[in-house]
Amino acid sequence: AQSVTQPDIHITVSEGASLELRCNYSYGATPYLFWYVQSPGQGLQLLLKYFSGDTLVQGIKGFEAEFKRSQSSFNLRKPSVHWSDAAEYFCAVGLNTGGFKTIFGAGTRLFVKA
Amino acid sequence: DVKVTQSSRYLVKRTGEKVFLECVQDMDHENMFWYRQDPGLGLRLIYFSYDVKMKEKGDIPEGYSVSREKKERFSLILESASTNQTSMYLCASSSDRRGTDTQYFGPGTRLTVL
Image (tube, rainbow over all chains, first blue to last red):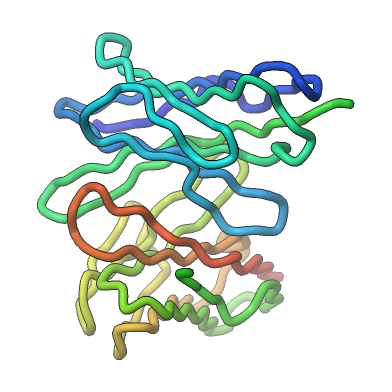
């Protein structure tokens, strides 16, 4: 069965430090991959997506993610975290199974300390 | 800018009540989705719709129904609310059936069933 795993329930980083959020997926074909962010009290907003081409994808707010087929991973990175990045981050896989469906991971909550 | 609005941010209902959650999008999107979000479980798809008067079950449709009479509006109905339906409900829309769809989310409705 298709699934998305975000191994870290929460992560705390210092402001200015680098960040990497992990995401692994289980899907037989080439997936469509997404990272969304949910700020407190808000809906989800797309950070970036991958569906083909260059495996390093740039997104909004200085985020990037790298697709590694051999590891079934799509980890999100940011070189220098800002306090406003504190939020919950969701990795998602898009499945084209006759109709498009998205499976979301359980989310990783990011805390930023001063 | 795509806007997805949900009728209420917070809702408190009693067990057995019929509950309507409304979602409206203003970008003429074909697809609309209802998810529920619970801590540690991420987003789970309840129902989705690819066209007016069309609906398909998601992963957890039990206890819910939907209605899409107009393209811009997608309603989620809890026929007889139960305490285990206390959750955050998120509506989303997207533009077409390709797997590259970005989903645009509303701010969510936090429903409490007493």
